[in-house]
Image (tube, rainbow, N blue to C red; front, side):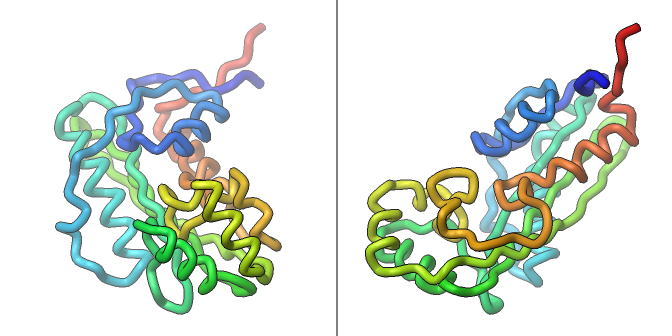
Length: 201
């Protein structure tokens, strides 16, 4: 079976290099047009609804500008003991987040939205993965913060990078923790004939 061949134009409404990488690894052709939607305009609600609404808003923003294209929007949050962890703005914040995750199980929620404005199609969902951290020493935390990796990632870590050493185990989708539930997204795109599986004779 060959890699999926694209039908209508597909746009990723995110500048995240991790989301780009995941779609590229899945053999999908797409354009990157980041949304400028103001995330602060979405009111905080239950985490699963909140992250899905963010994804819908980002996808909708780009879909209105490119009505003939299919657009993927996504947003990822880390949840520990009912508290949402965003991206740390300082070493102090990163240290606080990593300490709160140390030795515990937290949840990574990614809301995603796939839509096409012209035909009035929109699908959105939230995918949850449980992640168990090892018990971290102060030296490990300091070393990881010094690597610089925590600062552009929700929860102050990246499972696909150096931060993989923090993770004891996961329950659920690995790509969801990276930032995009690829299985679910590809499944929907195939269903809508946006991606077509082709086999050469």
